[in-house]
Amino acid sequence: MHSCALCVTTGGVYIESITINPAQVATAISSIDAQTADNAWRNLQGIRVAQPAHGLYIVNGKKVFVK
Image (cartoon, rainbow, N blue to C red; front, side):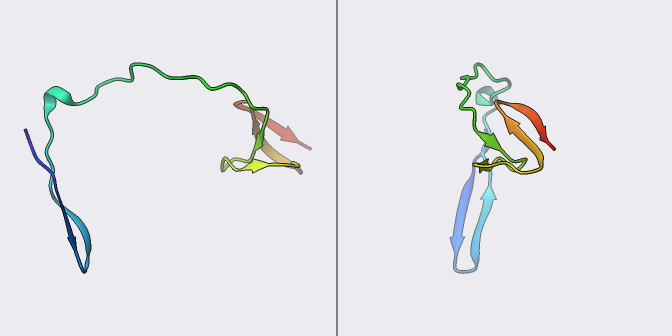
């Protein structure tokens, strides 16, 4: 078992040591909650777009190219 200590000084914040218990480390994803599609257009940075112009967008998880 290892431990973690977070130190806060006037010069900043730093980690002094880390604790890891190998028996409690996650090794897999047990489940994923799917979200319903909201039909929102998003740019490649994930920002919602009200009126898409020319370019590449994501709609319901699929890439859409607007000419």
